Length: 171
Image (tube, rainbow, N blue to C red):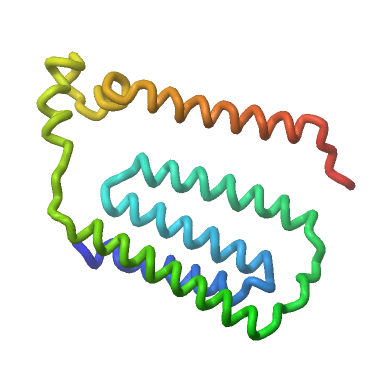
């Protein structure tokens, strides 16, 4: 089943590279960024995580729409290219950061796995009173965390509303 989710990963990688290469054509690059997010959402579907896929898809759509609005107000011409020395410096910093993150991910993924799942599964019914362990975790064991996430989304929605309340687009 590893082949099933590999194709969208390759498309996502190709779209991310294409977005990087076409960064001067902002709209084209934005389309490639959207394709990358769509492929990530498809991988979540193929890995049996429809809740993550839906969340990724919604975030991707909102991000692309907001970026299209931003692109409308940006100047058509991009700033001048930086000097070659600055490009090499930025590439070296990016490579060092990428290698550092790769090392951290490798270290985490090669550690022995010690899951907390048995703890929650054993306590879901006696302490949470429910047979659906996921619901018990979200509502009972991690209730304040869920409340915090909902509060952040609500505050973000209010901020967006406040910013756009008096906005009138030019004809």
